[in-house]
Length: 225
Image (tube, rainbow, N blue to C red):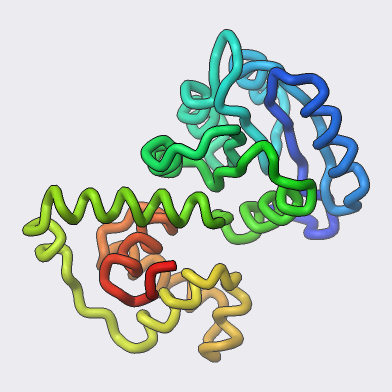
């Protein structure tokens, strides 16, 4: 999180299409709270940039020459673990989306998304870690169902007891509420909400917020979309 909340969120666009980069950069330049600080045309170029530049959010194209987004994602997380990564693609591939989320992607957007969606995703990932949309939700649910069929006994063994407060907080997380919004609703401090969220990860065995969302769907804490 930034020391100064008034500073703009810094962004790097990694995509091999010059016109696409220019279009996204132009649309984001109209937003005072976003600043595009660099561009890269492949993964290798991006990783070189990251050795010298700190950035909040990366828009990362999956298909690029020399080094694609899939190979680049784990390397970004090694070099700059706090940087949020939004994957960009023309393809809607459920298994690919789930794989990328498990590798550390914070969202997955179609390259046809309009500039307001991209802006919203950047803001949400920066503030709340993840930006879920119909593509990511469908992929996580599809993957979840496949895993349910493959290993029913394993799913049963993961059953844990959550108290009312934990269940409420998990449900609000699934509704994409920020920590502050959740704190206001349940009348607790943001620090306490974060502690409960960490406890939920330990209880459920989830390694990330995405894992908690999958747990919530699996155990009918939220209804499937």
